[in-house]
Image (cartoon, rainbow, N blue to C red):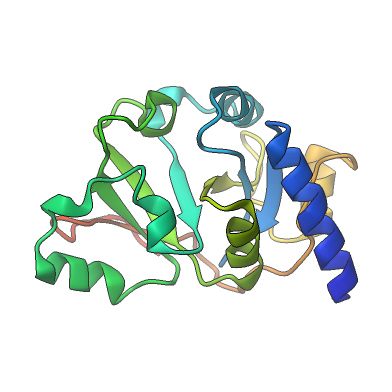
Length: 190
């Protein structure tokens, strides 16, 4: 894809994020929808769009581990637990960490934990770096629909005016694996 078009779509997405809107962007397997994790207004818009109950909690996707530190308590991890997490990052593995007490309930839902991922998808890395923080990340699909894998599918489900970072997914067939950072327990197969 034309780099100029990608840059334009990243700038449009940044503008939307700064206006507390929800955007779509390619991830390792499917398109995700996301927003500013620190904006209750933006997260409520995302939950309403997805018809997703707040109790389920959400995933944050980031360019680096540093971007996730304000939301998670990694002080409880042993060196071997830390090594197990970092051996899989960046990449398509989401880890569930204890959440900091200050992490908003609109992110954690009914849990005291938060699911987070350091991605290796170049467009998402760029987006999070330019935005300066992680994004909420959940699959881009309306309730009952298949997750979107192309820009055209996002437009078909969400409409022409929906802000989309134009690009390709990473080509993986399955959504990210989800594991407990403390125990290694597998919650969702990748």
